[in-house]
Amino acid sequence: MLLIAGIMMIAVNLRPALAAVGPLVAMIRDSTGLSNTMLGLLTTMPLLAFAGISLVAPLVTRRYGIPGMLAAAMGLLTIGILVRSIPAVFALYIGTLLLGIAIAFGNVLLPGLVKQSFSKKFGLMTSMYSGAMGLGSAVAAGITVPLAEGMSWGWRGALAVWAALAAAALLIWLPQLSRSKYVRPPGSYKQAMKQLLSSRLAWNVALYMGLQSLAFYVVLAWLPDMLQGRGEDAVFAGWMLSLSQATGVLGSLLTPLWAGKRPDQRSIILVLIAMEVVALFGLIFPGIGPVQLWVAMIGFALGGAFGLSLYLIVVRSSDTQTATKLSGMAQAIGYSLAATGPFIAGSLFDLTANWNYVFILLLAVAAIKLYTGLGAARPEEVALE
Image 1 (cartoon, helix red, strand yellow):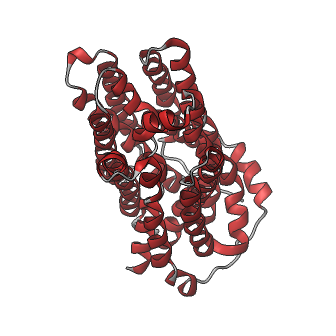
Image 2 (tube, rainbow, N blue to C red):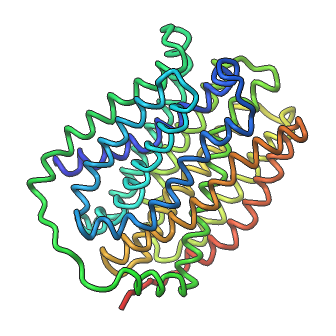
């Protein structure tokens, strides 16, 4: 029970520090004078950290073990959130980089830990911890503006509050350091990476995760600004982001459970992509239905795709070590791709002053995601020699 509680607390911390930024973009822009392109960098920097750290995380973990690295990650996350809230623009970016590094370790190591500790129930555990990640994101997106305005904390105070949650996760996780024994896995890390990079299945898993993350982080970074550009106030826009994250929780909870009942997940890919495309058209043409419906649909589709991508890492791996290495490879490639999303979206709006071009970009991403997802969903396994 302590292990499950620790996993849930770590998982719930892997999104609030990022989700809190989107609803505050207008306040940060007014306070600092930063352009949309530079504000997009605030979301892009953690993704670049995800990409870089994901490759080395399995290697570092060979030395210190999963429990130790997760404890270090929660400590670094606490520090990064606090540094980001220091009243200086350079601290905003340094703190963002630090918390991105911390979250990257959690992203990579949780799938391997689930494979190792819950080998017969990894569908259920993947559902639980991906749902916890979505829950953290939804709560952060919803209460950030009320904290900044209603509580008069300002945007820096509204960002700093999440350090308390990270510190709590560290305290709950500490018992695992004495309860867990770590044995260094055999085999060459370099050779394992070569095998993964030559696997078409591994590439499909990585690209599906990357394209899903690209769409997710574009919505996370810019949905409030998109809605405010259509005349909505900041509180409503923040709650719409929260709605997308809340339905994302539902998607990330249900999809791994659904996927776990069948060896072939291609039909699930088709359903999620269809839902995403319909929602994007609804956002492009807001007169055809309430914005709440389209926001809820895209949230469910992206949340479901995220839960499914985590599930695919585990179910397509033959053992714990393969799951950890595939997780590192998939997230390194995936987040390298995803990192371009918020930056391109912000730059595209700066050039065109029209958010519909960003929605069209997301439609193109969905088409490619369909192709890679169908490849990743085939009932096969990656096995390392």
